[in-house]
Length: 144
Image (cartoon, rainbow, N blue to C red):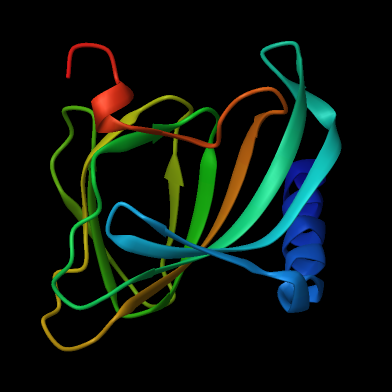
């Protein structure tokens, strides 16, 4: 457990150090800035892995298209409110200062900023196989 925490802390530190090289993307309702992408020594399901650190901004009242990640996500709400529902679970609301975890491969069927006036800012650490896409859109999900 301590090793995992230290690894995540190191990833976040590396990520903030890479802000000058950040990449911006509009991804299905959110502005995503990649802060860092590093290959790590750990594996996921026996595959070489990568850790990607991203800042996600969701403007007031916006929803993000349904999607899934190829690996687990560890998140921190930097600003505003964040609502999401994974798979068949009920919607959960997080506020600035809250942390969240998303298991590998779960479907984000609801992801939104419920506030009509304030943006939402998240810091997300995504662990994923090196050969996998970080995110799969709803249109690409089986059965959608």
